[in-house]
Image (cartoon, rainbow, N blue to C red):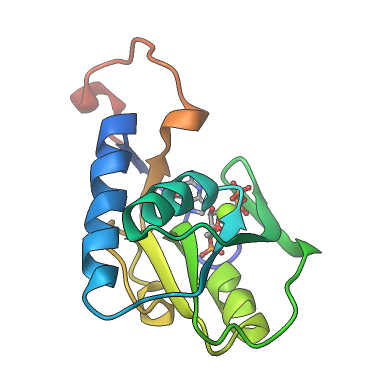
Length: 160
Ligand SMILES: O=P(O)(O)OC[C@H]1O[C@H](OP(=O)(O)OP(=O)(O)O)[C@H](O)[C@@H]1O
Ligand SMILES: Nc1nc2[nH]cnc2c(=O)[nH]1
Ligand SMILES: [Mg+2]
C-alpha cells in the first residue's frame, strides 16, 4: 500500500451482514435524499448499489468504473469508464473508502453528487457524505465475493 501501513487485521463481512449494512445505509439516505439515479463505483459498489437502489426504488443506474488495488496492494488509479455531467441529483455508492484516493477521484468527476459508502476507514472518512460502519485503518475488509470458508489458526498464535 502507498499511503498507509499494510493492514494486520481482517474484518470479514458475510452476505447477510452486507445486506443489513447496505439497508442501514438506505435508511440513512432516505432521510435526506431522493436521488434521480445511482452511480455504482465498480466493482465493489455494485452489490451495495443494487441493495440501496431496491430500497430507494431507484431504477436508473450508471457505473463509474475505477480500479486501483491488486489484492491488498494499491497501485495507480485507472478510470475505465467515466460519466458525463457534474452529478447533480445523483447518489454515488461504493463499498468502502480506505485511503480516500478513489473517493477523491470520484468527487473530482462528479462534484455535485452525494457520495455514500457502506464502510469507511479514518483516512477516507472525511471524503464521504454518508457511511454506516467505521473500520480501523489497519484492518482489511473481506467481502463475501472475495472469500470462501477455510480453517485458520487461533488469533493468539498469529500475533506479532
Ligand atoms: O479509498 P481507497 O484507498 O481508494 O480504496 C477504496 C477503493 O478500493 C476498492 O476498489 P478496488 O480498486 O480494489 O477495485 P474493485 O472495486 O474492483 O474491487 C474499493 O471498492 C474502493 O473503491
Ligand atoms: N476488499 C477490500 N478492498 C479494499 N480496497 C481498499 N481497502 C480495502 C479493504 O479493506 N478491503
Ligand atoms: Mg472499488
